[in-house]
Image (cartoon, rainbow, N blue to C red; front, side, top):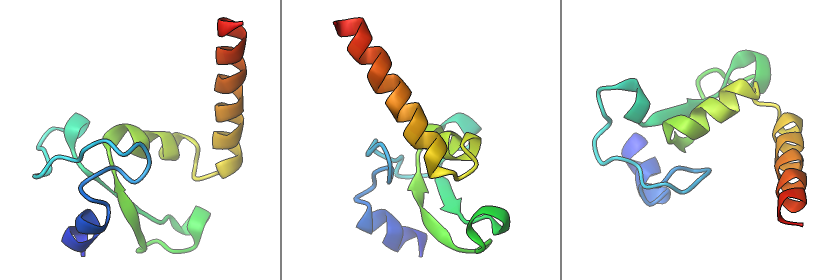
Length: 86
């Protein structure tokens, strides 16, 4: 299942499209993350949703799988960048 998902994602993170390591690394900072559902947020604790790099996995975890938090974070960054370049 994981190998088929890697093939579908072309060995890239499902979010940032960074190249995933061919072999999962031993240390946590470079390990391939298998994104799975959580009962409290998705209702599906065993669903594998995709393969992510560690950074993108952390982003979703800190946002508690709530898209509205990520939308607000993106809007905040866009506004800050627009102000910075103006």
